[in-house]
Image (tube, rainbow, N blue to C red; front, side, top):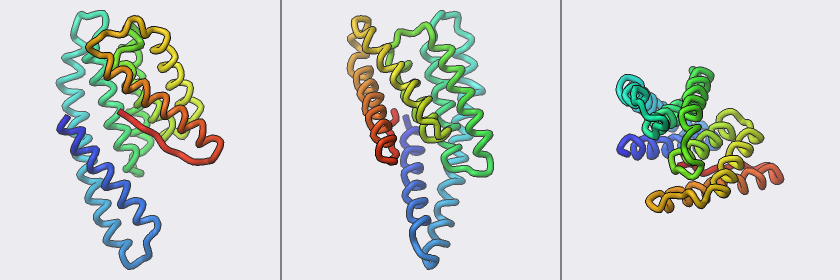
Length: 198
């Protein structure tokens, strides 16, 4: 949670600075670009640390489990995909590598999640974030919408299996999936973009 909060705040700062740099005149642009670079460097360091921690300790430990369905493994692989996605958002030098690494982690998470119920909040969070990856990073709205719709529809069909302790989390993520689908469908009609992620 600590990493998520720090990275979330830095990503927001980077987006604001990126927006300012693209519209302001030359007078402030140099200062904005320098500060944006500083934020980028900090984000790269944090995200790289998180991916290292995931690879060296958490994913390995979770995948060594004998459990048929391992929510920890799915969660950590999703997290790895997320942090590579954050790197792909900001880093143009290694963007293709980060896109590939992110997609690989999300695919591995999907494989590990196959035996989980479609209403599980970890499975739904994976679908939400992987669909955002397709929409924002891969610029593939069709794949994003298909993934989000399938996850949403599967969860709706299995609502009777929804565990009481995960009801609130699951329904919140389902709402975010539905919101993104509505936003992305209207963006197709209007040429606008946007998304929500977990």
